[in-house]
Length: 149
Image 1 (cartoon, rainbow, N blue to C red):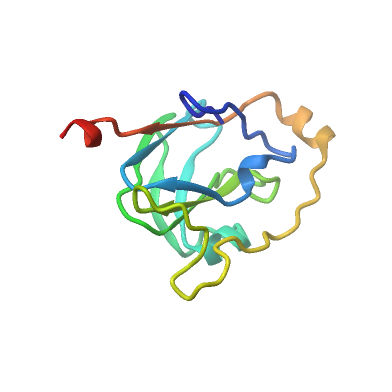
Image 2: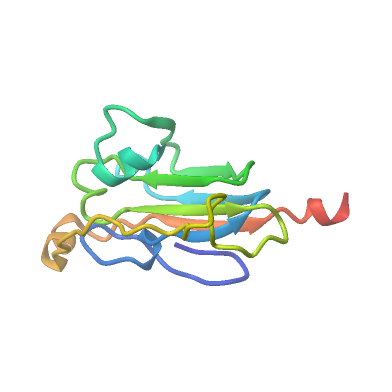
């Protein structure tokens, strides 16, 4: 995963990833996914689908171009998975907790912590090397037009 102007990281099947944890961002930010078309995809899903990695229901949107841009339009939790066989269960998933600009809280409206424990996975680095070195790159960019409008 690559965050322009801030951090850099990658998501790779079978390897533990810091990006599979809940992250906090703001409304009007963008997420850019860069990957080899056909080797990966990006599904925006419900939390239940995120936890089960079963995309037979709960799919909000599908992105398959290899160069996908998603605007985080509202303050809510967004859940993303790769629906290529085995990738989600191998850790290619993450949540984005989007807050209103300027809000730094990590709590929900009920006052509880916004992060929840994720289902455990049993990553196998040997499995990842068998699949090759395909990686999804995630790029986040703050919509600077907001500041100039």
